[in-house]
Length: 340
Image (tube, rainbow, N blue to C red; front, top):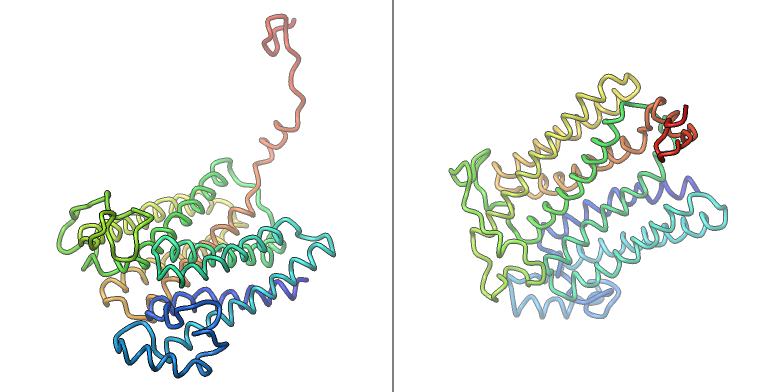
């Protein structure tokens, strides 16, 4: 089963960034139906329908190149789904890693439904963001199944597991904010860095920026989403990056005392610096496609490193001994140690 898990992990490493490439290259509606393309198994079989749609809207979302990108992603995702089905079957049969395998199967089923809704609901931001998070979840579960058994547990100070857990949670929230930025096309709403459009603190509008049920580009009242809302979405993602950075630096500072953790912490620091550099470069260079896709892959790498770090940490020995000790007898007043 280990070979199956590694094969699925390597395929997921391709599928997740490729999904970002499809979205960022505006190919998400290259085939506006699901699971086929204009009812066919490939864009080659649907070439006439694609050509007709493109002739009606030359600058629209449909073209043969976009259709092939969209369908290539579906073929790869479908192959990953089959591998995960095999992993679930083997886990149940061999009675190994049943819990993560079951969670993986449930996540993939949800992810397939979100993939369908992404197309049929015409890139609704909340669905696109959820689809991104689902793909990341599949990748993280596979990474944990493949890598966590080979990592040596480390007993650290009581605060370090808590901080590492907070860091992983903050990264998930930051990933959701990044997905919201991307699905609302707010990546270039703030020009310049660290200031936003020449302002150290731009005008923010929360009442429209995070309305989950609206369509792409629309405000809650049916009009177009205004620029201040796009700035709000982008600016909160920057603030989230600052919060993550502070938490991560705290984890590095506290965990560096443990020699066994230093290689892992070095990887965490490298992934963080890479991700920060990619984020700043995307703003300053006006979101070039290769850097935008790399930023998505960097987020997956950073989250993976943080989650694996948290999985290694154990409570310190003193705390474990205290937890194992029997409770002291109660005295006549119901308080421990009241008897003499």
